[in-house]
Length: 80
Image (tube, rainbow, N blue to C red; front, side, top):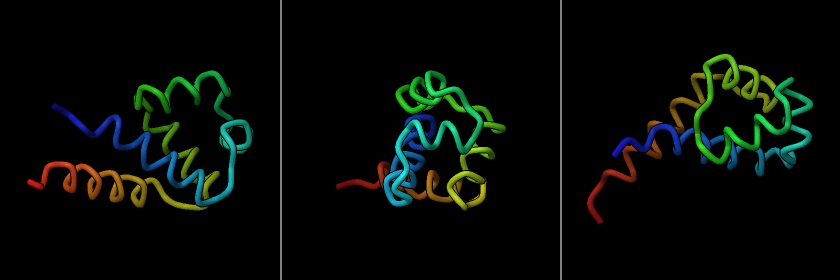
């Protein structure tokens, strides 16, 4: 199973919470339609451009979001 797509949604959701941003605020800051952002967060199906815009809105980089996603994916694969 590929955990990368849901992983990026989790990472973005965590970053939103840490930044104190609602979906509406992140949509406004990133320039992504709120309905699109809501769907992407639910499905984890972001384009690179969307991740870059979200990173900028959250004050972080695309590479940092990707790194966090990789860490989350690796942690999910580790045996309990």
